[in-house]
Image (cartoon, rainbow, N blue to C red):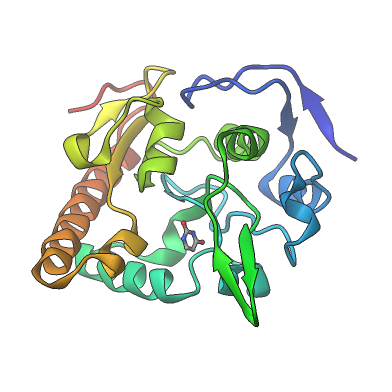
Length: 227
Ligand code: URA
């Protein structure tokens, strides 16, 4: 049974009209039945976040791709493979962090036998925001790393540019949770030639910042400001 309140989400850039409440397991089960935007109709399933309920660090992607849609788990396709490698290089364990997406359903355009990835529009992103807000409210991560512009703008607002502002720790709207934006693994995969190497190295460097800050935050009381 879903319990909802109208509390705004202070951590995210935009508030949500209704905030689903519950443990992460309860939220996951409620989100399976979400009909807040049309994306559910053609997707296989809701791809909810995964990870320990006491994780200090949340990693936020954009939206599931075809393999995530089929498996029901975030970042299991090619972008996930690159992310796993970058996490390892940065000294982070995937099993210790909470990994989720800004939008929880796969959006695509059928092309023959293929399903071509399509970016969720602003209305679909806002309809789905309740689930991200609910995950944040339940988990209460100390640091959120946003990968890609959709995720970064969900945290920092529509004017945020990953190209200009990645890699810097900053406080989110509640004044205590910290956020950091970096490249999306798919953007690294798409980058041509030497650009790909540079973006990958920057992704790893940003994840290292997150690794060190989340390790420090684990030992600091919750209201501590960013270093
Ligand atoms: N890209 C994302 O943003 N999320 C996934 O889960 C997979 C690819």
